Length: 228
Image (tube, rainbow, N blue to C red; front, side):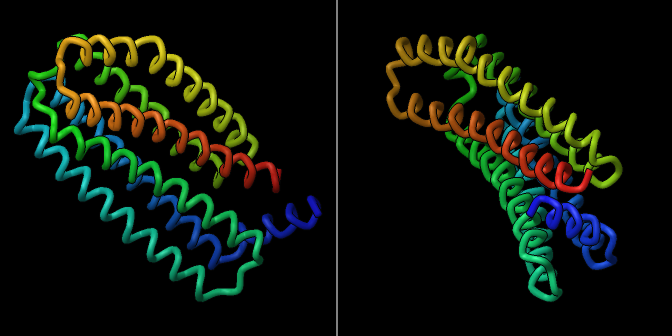
C-alpha cells in the first residue's frame, strides 16, 4: 500500500493538471498567510491604542480571507473536473481545508478584537497579545515555507514541518506562562465579565490558529514522505 501511494504521488506531481492544482494551492496558502499578516497588524494597532488602524487592518483581514475563499472554490472546482486518484484528491482537500481553518481563526480573532476598547486592557496584557501575534505570524510563514519546499524538495519539506511543530510547542508554552497569567490578573481587576469572555475567545482562537498551522504541516509532511 505504501509503495502504491508513493508511486501515485510521483505521477500526480508530474502531470500538468495536478501541477495546476498545486499552483492554486500555493496561491491559496499565500492568501491565508496574508490573512495572518493583517491579523498581526491588527493586534499591533490595538496594542498601540490606534482604534482607527485596528478597523482599517481588519478590512484587509477580511479582503485576504475572501480572496483565499475564492481560490479554495476554484481548487474544488478543478478537483471535480479531472480524474484524480482518491488518495491524491484526499491529500489536496485535507491540505486545502486545514489551511482554510488558519484564515478563519485569524479573521475571527481580529473581528472580536473590534469589540474590546484598547484602553480597557493593561499595557502588559496588550504587549503579550502583540507578542502572541508575532509568534503566530512566524509559524504561519514557516507553514508557507514548508509548502514551497514540498514542490521543490520534499525531503526539506519534512524538516520544515518539524520546525512548525517545534514552534507550536513554544507558542503553547508562551500562552500558558505569559498570556494566561496576564489575562487572569486583568479579569480579576476589570470586573467586566463580557470583555473577559470575548478576550478568552480571542486567546483560544489564536491558540487554535497555531494548532491548525501544525495540522497543515502534518499534511505537508505526509505528502512529502509519500514520494521521497
